[in-house]
Length: 253
Image 1 (cartoon, rainbow, N blue to C red):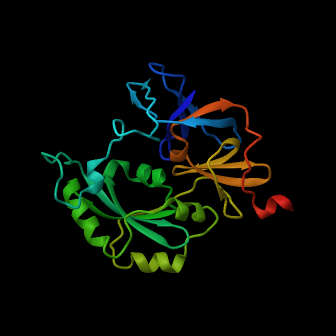
Image 2: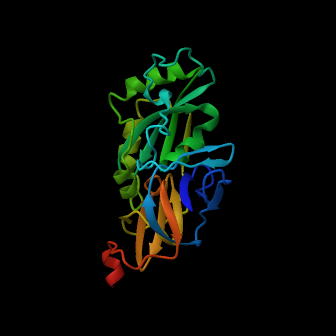
């Protein structure tokens, strides 16, 4: 069985697994309190999913080989369309997202997907600051704001945010230049007293999911797993006892 994808907290939170080429992809929901018990085998390309079925690939590149790597071209757009013909004519929102304690990111998405997109990224707070008629205008505005704010947040910063609160003064100061249309205070049901240890594992009790970070408790330590780092691994039922994992100081108390 191979882990071939995942759904983030914006889409219900689940691991996507397949028993092989041509098999239907199975969705394994991730709910707080659920138990995962898999050890990680070899890792190779996760192939692709076509109409709910897995098209397997045995090339060694992971999570995807060159034939199954796709780049969302709109993510690189700065207002000058990179497609042969611009097709992002739906209403778009420009937003500023906060990741605790004080990382503030500008981004764009289709207006109808705004809150979903924020949860996909694991944002703690957000403010909708512009609504425009199409994606090109939104990207132009984003590009200008990105001269002052970041337009991407690294996984390490998101792990740190799991045990932090948003710096209220800094957040308020950041939004002073904008006419805020709508504010979001996003809750993921996670309470981490200390920063989780970052690991790549698929065994433990599910604490919750924030963005694509899966938080697991195992042996008295809380771990944060970037689900993208799991994609491509063959899963073997049963926890591995041979691998040494980092432990938090609290696990020795």
